[in-house]
Length: 138
Image (tube, rainbow, N blue to C red; front, side):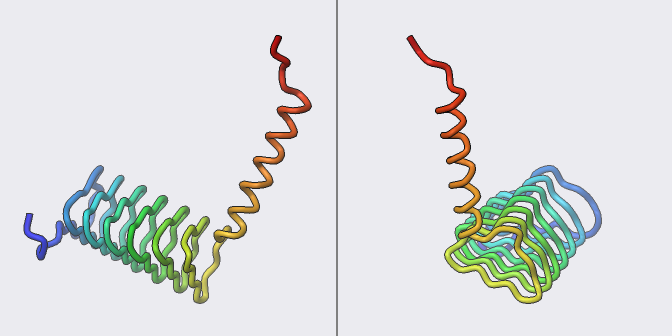
């Protein structure tokens, strides 16, 4: 596949898996997007994105995003996002895991610090539960 020409999905439809060096989706949805390079999602959505480059979402959304590059969202949302940097403008994100998270007129349910606190709290509860209620081995 030519690196300069992205795999393009345009106009209504749902596609179970879309893959390519670069992916451009407009007015459509996908179950999974697997790209070695950049992904552009415009007025569409996807359940899972695995992106080797940068991700741009405009007026769309995704459930789970794993990107080795930057993640930029404008008027959209993501449930879980992992990337080099995450920037959300006029949107929502449930869990943002990145060294750099920028939110403009947006909300995040959990950022890196909150996710660490929740994970530590959950780990402590499990450890205490095992100590108190764990079965003894003989």
